Amino acid sequence: MFIDAKKAHLNPRCDQEVFIDLPEEAEAGEGMCGRLVYWLYGCRPSAQAWENFYAGKLEGVGFKRGDACGVVFYCEERDLSCVCHGDDFTCVGEEEELNWLATEMQKWFELKVRGVLGPEAKDDK
Image (cartoon, rainbow, N blue to C red; front, side, top):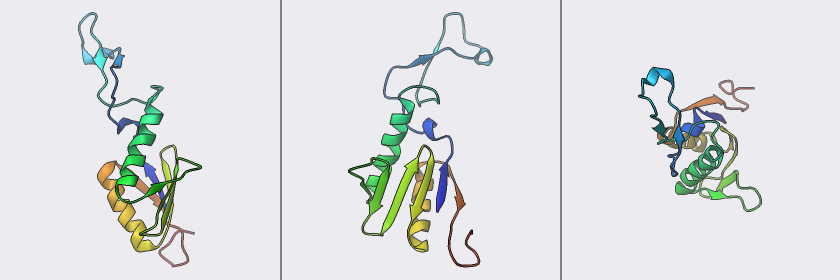
């Protein structure tokens, strides 16, 4: 199963005091700025915050993070493997377990299932 997390870096809360210039349409007064509540793309810590966010969610439902590579996860109970590259997840397992994982992930962030590879007619090739 291939899953794309939409607006990935906008999901983790910003745990630092980060301020930005506001766009003109915000109609902020002279000398005003905005404080981030959630990370924005382009902020240096946003990628690390995203990794910590999804890793915590996966670990919370039974996945163990890889020792050699921190973006590889395995859930022994469900025999599911998952690898994340940026905001894309590639997951391997039985159909019922993959559907469970997609349902769980929809609780955490907006996503799109890009495809499910398999031998049956309904599967992508």
